[in-house]
Length: 180
Image (cartoon, rainbow, N blue to C red; front, side):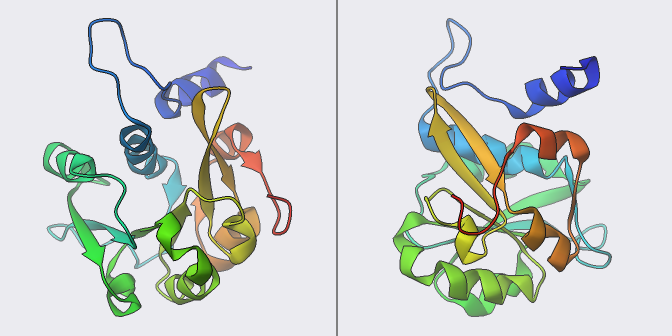
């Protein structure tokens, strides 16, 4: 692994526990960290990131597994130089106002519908459920070897105009629809 790739891996990878003496992070706190970190390695299509002064919006549709942790990220960080706002969506109508949409496992039966609607935005879609990529979701988080990892549907990213860095793609378990 090259030095550059190692730096990217350190920036993205978060183990299931943190340094000694610190509180242990839950699975969904780690997944929330991944969601924020993906923004550092993905470029949105022109005109999709809000203008300066407007917030970067992360939406959650379905049963929110993050508790207040995403809200803490929004309070403490910026994304692409913008304040962060978390929207918990009750319908797809508001999905177009998001830059990222996390699709909770409770929406498993609607993944394809939600992903298709989000692509119109275009909105970066993220889930953490087996089969999500084959339903059109762009990034799926999963656990392996006691670590949170991710897989990317490169075809969906490209068709929607997103660009993931080569380093991010190397760290992902690449999956084509139907293989995850």
